[in-house]
Image (tube, rainbow, N blue to C red):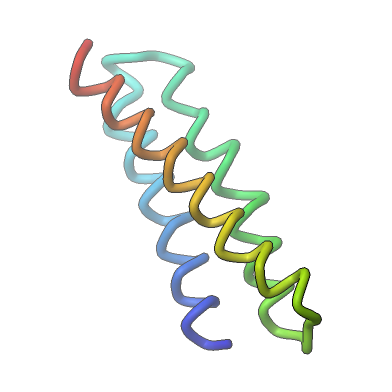
Length: 81
């Protein structure tokens, strides 16, 4: 449970830092990582605190994986441009 909390909070922090650093290069597209990570991180943070069934246990890593892909694509776009 605590590991999911730390993962969600660190992903939200990294996306905010990335958006701040990439804003000069790619403009408003840099906000894509924050727009993906903020709700997903909040959901993972709240969902991991309660007892959950098998469906939710599978959904938490999936949501985090998709959010990491969005953050990675934003970082790649910043590097390429």
